[in-house]
Each structure stands twice: as structure tokens, then as C-alpha cells.
Length: 52
Image (cartoon, rainbow, N blue to C red; front, side, top):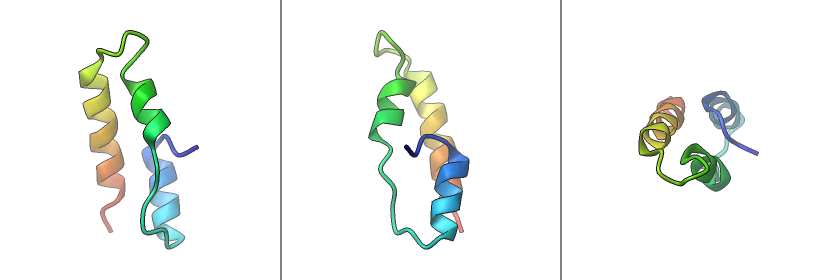
């Protein structure tokens, strides 16, 4: 699945209009579902990878 900025970059280069990263977001929250800082880091990295 799509879970890293490099995956997003590759798909954007291939012409994708969007990506689905739901599982990666859930995983980023950690086992207790409280790692908001980890989630924010992941989202920031994924967002940056969408910039063309």
C-alpha cells in the first residue's frame, strides 16, 4: 500500500490525481491510537510529496 512519501511521489509522477493512505494513517497513530505527533509527521511528509 501507499505509506511513504516516496510512494506518493512515484504515483504523482505517474499521473495519479490522488492516493489513499488510510491504513498508513491508522498505523502512524501507534498501538494505543495516541501518537498524534507521529501522525502529524507522516501527514506532513505525505503532503510535501504531493507538491509538483
